[in-house]
Amino acid sequence: MGLWQLNADTLAHSRFVVSPLSETFACLKLLHTADAAHPGEHAWLRAHLPAYRARLAADPVTARLVRAGLGREWIADFLTPAPRGDETFADEVARVRSTAPDAARAHLRLALAGPLPAALDRDDLPERAAVLLEWVWEATVRPSWDRRRRVLEADVLARTAQVSTGGWASVLDAIRPGRTRWLGENRLQINLHEYPPREISGAELVLVPVTVQRAGWVAWDDGVRYAAVYPCVGVLAHPAGRAVRSALGALLGAARAEVLLLLASPMSTTQLTAVTGQGLGSVGRHLRVLREAGLVERRRAGRSVLYVRTAAGDALTEASEQERSRSRRRP
Image (cartoon, rainbow, N blue to C red):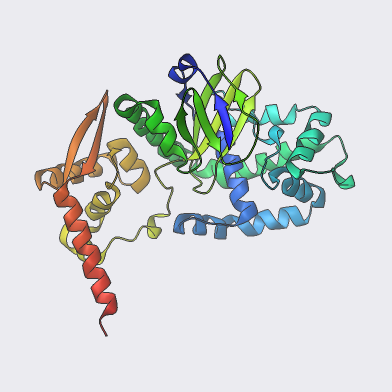
């Protein structure tokens, strides 16, 4: 397994950052694999995959660069510079563009775990990568960036609250279950690959959410900054893709039922607003009614207020699911 070794001070000073380039690269990966995790991603792929494939078909060198850069088990490092926080997309992609050609070729050889194809033995690889990332940003991410950023910021809020209640270990165990976990004794398992441990004590550790649900990778500026990119909790789903169970919707109203269903895990008002697309006032009214009915409860975590279903709320949603299952079995 891949291990990072870090002392208590490094862990205590870890922080969350939102990165436009990381979100863009996650979307590039989704376009490359076309492996959607939920209806919202299916709808996004239907909208953007044809143009992406046409672009690569017209530029075979960049197409080979993408295939090589995403690698088998390792991403070419120059494509994913470690986010610093408070950077614009232009700032971040400039670091991709400024990569030395020799370094880019070396990163690609590592990603390929073998020799570099002759077609990629050239000096314009960083420029080509930057141009493609700029296209993905402008065509597929920037139009929805405000909404994406709200979802990412809501995830950061929830994770920060979790740090105050369960400590950093609980957060690290949860960001990529089965892959990332705190092992104790200053050891952080960062992935399942067999690589030599890295000593990162004294460097900066940043945790970076992205909305793409099958995304995740690590990045670093060696000795300075290390980043773990993970899929956020709040799925950026297409509004039509979130199915509300009919019986529950009839009882509570579709919008209120959606809020109740989402509260299987604690979420803030901000997070619910971002994920559902409902207005802040509407979400607040739904939460007030659900609280008065005893279906959700409010918990304070540091400065944050989180909502979660009560036992009665769980029972209602479970009963609705059982009724739906019985209806499907009826002739």
